[in-house]
Structures are given as structure tokens and as C-alpha cells.
Image 1 (cartoon, rainbow, N blue to C red):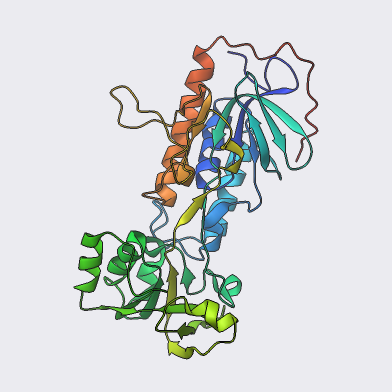
Image 2 (image 1 turned 120 degrees about the vertical axis):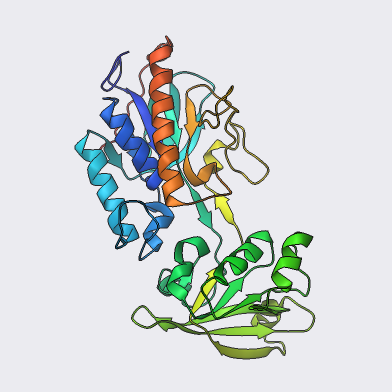
Length: 352
């Protein structure tokens, strides 16, 4: 197989979309295989993990490690082996032809023999006042990541689906009390999850209620939350319209958003890469294997939260990133597909 930058100067062997744990892990493995991968860092380099101040469940760090520090270490490790990084996102992906063509946000076009999609999934935010400042300082989108920091605390969980019930139930392992805040008087979660949550003695429900502000500071953390409620539900709409609603400030030590994630797959929507109904990349079943990162398009692989709506953990994303790089390396070695197309070379103009 042709290693390095490819058979022609304007075609990469591997481009990795995303610079979270999955993308960085893929970059380390691909770089160690002398594929000289190019990593597109995206609009938020490092992904969701950079919003987590302390990580205590990542293997090898018994004292914990900051999310930003873990990401920076991973980037330095990948660069050490020859990975390149550039600040850009993919606006359009043409994967019906080989080499694949990627139109980038910086106006340039890349061509690559293999593509690893590790663009992650973004947690939906409520839009409450101060959430930008307090994300990672008592406000979280991941109970399994941050629940252990809230022993004996009073917590709010925002949401009404299965994920909200799962978060609430998990948090009862640590918290003194958990209150589920929902804008209607009926949950959309499955019946079995509703029963489990409602039967738990440490879980309460604030019906027809919404969160409008989180109070505190990065030094103090979350100290209270401002809630609005109305018996007809959807109180925030009425609150913003200056209608009569009940406004209450409640003392809490943490807030967890559980209103779902949106996979960052807009650039794949009109391609042969198959997405599920929620937009997650679907990976093909491996014959006899327990898992694969292969997509419906040969040469396109996916790893991390962009294809995993269930686990969404740093350690699983890292594992899948390494799998994607290994799968891409094997595919590149086994295929005889041409590196250069019959069209004129497309200038890349991409650098660090």
C-alpha cells in the first residue's frame, strides 16, 4: 500500500472528521500506521469532553483528569506520531466516487481514500440563563460522567423521556434527592421507565415546570435554580409572554440536562452513508464479529458518539476510534482502488 500522503500530493490516505476522544484515538492509531492522517477539529475542538472539569472513570487516571487536559494530551500524542490538525468542518461530502471529496468550511476541498467520521453528538441545551458559564461547574449533560461528584446533594434532572428517567435513577446512587423537571404533566418515557422512577423514594417530579435560570458561579458551583410553572404546561412560553406563571427559586447543588443529543451528521444527510431516524451513523453488521465501524459506503468508517446513542462514554469512544483506524488501515491495504481520479487535481490549501 502507498503510505504517506498518498499516490498524488492532493489525496490523503485518511481524513478524520472530529477531534474528540474517538477522533484522537483514531488519529493515534492511523498515524502509528504511517497513514499521516489529517484531523478536522470542527467548531468545538475536543468535543463534549472539554465541558467536563474532572473525569474519574477513564482508565489509567486514579486521581482523575480534566477533560481539556485529556484532550490536549491526546492531540499531542497523535501529533507526535505524525497526525496533522486543521480548524475546519465538512460542509459537503461526496462519497459516491473515489477518492472521496470533502468541501470544507474554510473554502478548500480535500480528497481522501478513506474517511473516519468521529464528529460526535451534541447534547441539547435548555437555553436557561447562565448555562454557558456553569456547564461543567454543577451543570452537566452526563450523569454517569459526573454523578459521583454529587454525593448527598439535591439535584434536578431536566427532561421527560427514557434518558431522563435513566439519569434520575442513576443519580439516586449518590444524591440525597432528585427532582425531575418536566414541562408537561405526562412523561414521554416508556411505561417501565416511568414506573421505576415514580416508585423510587428519592425521586420527585415537578410537573408543568421549566427551568429558566441556573444560579451560582464557577467558584461556588450551582447553588439554586429558577423554575417557572403553570397548570396548563409549557410555562416558559407563558413566562416569556409575561403571562401569569409561578416563579420559584429552589436550592439545588446540581442540574442535569437529559433532553437528548443530536449527532453531528448534517454533512452526511444526502450521501449513501446510512443514518438512523435520529441521525446517527449506522454501522454495518460484521459477519461473525461482535462489532464494526464500517458504514454502508466502503472506505467510510464511523466511531464514537456519532454512531453510538447508547453508551456515549469517553472510554468506549476511544475504543471505537482505534477500531475505526484499524478497519481503515486494513481496508486501504486490501483495496486496489485508484488514489487519483480522472478529474483534474483539486487544490487542498489546508494546513495547520
